[in-house]
Amino acid sequence: MTEAAAMTPGTKYNRVLLKISGEALMGDQGYGLHPPTVERIAKEVKSVHDLGVEICMVIGGGNIFRGLAGSAQGMERTTADYMGMLATVMNALAMQSALEGHGVFTRVISAIRMDEVAEPYIRRRAVRHLEKKRVCIFAAGTGNPYFTTDTAATLRANEMACEAIFKGTKVDGVYDSDPKKNPDAKRYEKVTYDEVLQKHLGVMDASAIALARDNSLPIIVFSLDEPGGFRGILAGQGTYTTVHG
Image (cartoon, rainbow, N blue to C red; front, side, top):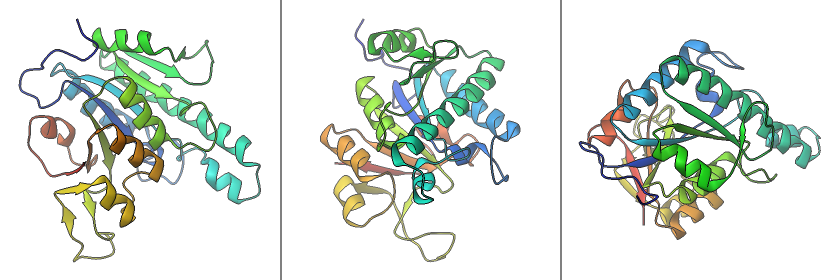
């Protein structure tokens, strides 16, 4: 059997990576984790897992601590970034608990060793977990400061031979301006990597977009607040924007 998954009936993709921000887990709160929101996202992931799709996840840590913000307030940047990485582990453990509560076997895999709560990142072992239909949540970013979880998501997606990155956001795609502020904002059906960089569309940071472009890895931007949206897109339905070459 190859490292890429066999064809999954009824879906466009066999193995994908879901990237969500830490803020997505805090619901309407201003900080931390909102358990009903974590549960809702876990159910969305389970609905896709039930199709037979192999799923990786990367979750940001901005609901607990954001390294760049800490650095802006005078904290040494490297220390602040490591603190942000630890925040992503907390979010990953929360999502693991929610998923396993729904019967989905899950592994938290950390780029920073903390063997009591997560597995260390070993690529071949992670691939085997996916082949055994376990959800792999990659935590602690790349394990290096100065890199965001966007870059970590793109890196892991490439390493795991994922066919696409699904970027769950508050809006149903990529717009030319903020649709919450501008009612005339235009949504792109498709947009190229270079357009994202040139127009500063804010899909992911520049290094993540460049890494996706160099490896021809499509990024699908969709609304995580739309019930059934994740599953629908895998079946070729729904509203979203594809970032491609």
